[in-house]
Length: 387
Image: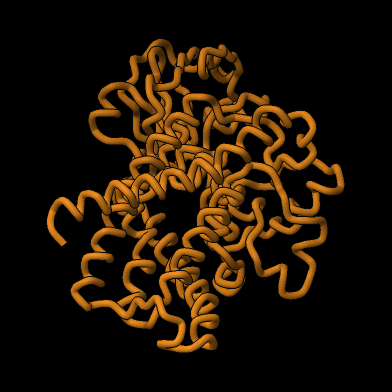
């Protein structure tokens, strides 16, 4: 293959990947997030919508970036196949129908296992900013979030689809069916609404298939529910949120949909929100906080909110108690989702590993780790979705 043929293949693969992405994501987004928003409210996983048009644009742009990465890897795989390095085949007779059909579930199981462990690895504080941070900027995911990855994560996500054709015979049709299934599964996992029927999590065998609630809880709570297609790795490794089945059942029972506790299944509430080893931020100080706490003013996507904090309580904990929809995910200062710009006032942060030195100097804080130490605190969203 010469350069012109490679470029043609790349453009074709990118166009095809992007077309499938929009064909899967756009109709479901339009149906559930636009025209049917009120009709499907009872099936909405998070009771209130926190995603905005800014988040949708962010997710679409990063998904298009992922499609570029996928197209490049597609072309590289085609090139290596033409050189005779892979075990890809197009004639069923080469390996028979039995293997061709069995290779699909084998592919699913292997991809799911790789995804679980690589996903957990990308949540490591040292790897998270370089691989997974962009995807978790959507704590109220929509269908457009499905492939909103950093280029590094896009490579990780494609790894098994790229590697397996070198180690086991794979029919090209099986690869294509898997890619379509994977795209549909990802879009449904990020839909924000539950489409699986009542009782799904109680049925034998079917209960091991992930639902929309399963992955939505991961975006909302960060540490847990890492699985892609199946729930068994989370069950085996103790990383499934204890209230997962209750959250699923609540969709159909009309019960409150808020989780009992947003955090890691093995973590206690005090471990998440209680500040320790406080370090001052660089936000401008005013006066020392009073015994009654602080007044916090925050602007979120043009909407002003005002609330008070109790003495020693984090900004995020106070906001959530008073139904102020501050962005958040892990509540442990690792993901950076709760980052806001402090324009007036002073806080003390338990830790700030999710912030760069430049962000600290500019006055950014992590609300889940920040305890106000001034009478008044003014916060606002950064100018972009980056966080």
